[in-house]
Image 1 (cartoon, rainbow, N blue to C red):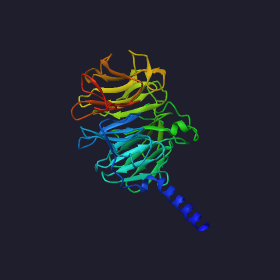
Image 2 (cartoon, one colour):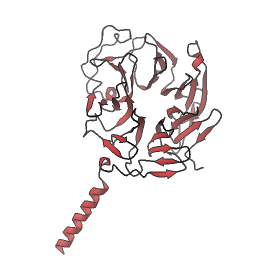
Image 3 (cartoon, helix red, strand yellow):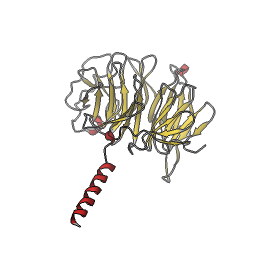
Image 4 (tube, rainbow, N blue to C red):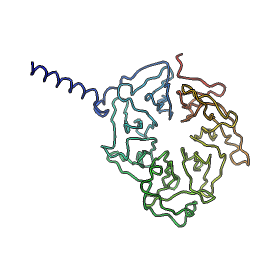
Length: 358
């Protein structure tokens, strides 16, 4: 009887181990779950791949839309909350998560990267591919660069020198950032500018890195750019920043502010219009679905690209939701955006909700 109990105990332990195997051991389970409805939870990022598929990073999985149906490709791989998605120049997909690191997907199998492999943190909120093909990850522990073979981490804090002269406004603020300040290591966005310098937007200050030195970026008033949530480089090479201090454009010499309202995401379409998710000017409050509370309404807004140099550019609010996240223009000119309760598509006239079954 004792031997039988020992065998049973071993079987239970074995099964438990199989259930909790890390995602890196579940590489070939790519069946996914097909549905006519898209994500129903917070959807942080939306992109379109070279095949025309729409990908959504959501808190209930990584979804692919082929124009007919949605597939949750991570349904059997991970229960992580996904934050960002990138298709690299080789056609591979990268999914970042908050808590489970990064997933690499080649269309057939997955590979999971975590702090065990060299990531600065398993809480990864953004991803970027630079001109050289390196993949950068913004984490809650700093930035991580992956060259295809190994990882290199870059902390945003510490005793880094500040440049004393530059065409940018970076010399007016030279106070050191405490090494234990988590806000300054929580990276929201990464871009590479036309001069090959890397910008890191954090919940603290925005930092710039030339390969040797980290500096704090300040605006035309000499104040650090704080809590920037989104950055893009437009077709002309200008840097757009959205965050706590509103929407700003840097043309290589000066910063121009377009709004003081909080901006969560910035996107440029093919016509040169700038789209943002920001606090609504028309609808100050609305119900937060499922929570029974009022929250500031967010707007999907479009800045007319032909008026960006005007004293008062033309801005149109397209949709209002309780928070709006990633924005995408697809190859047909539709605008997709993520929200608290899934993904939506604007065709120029109406907004379609994809969390409902067709």
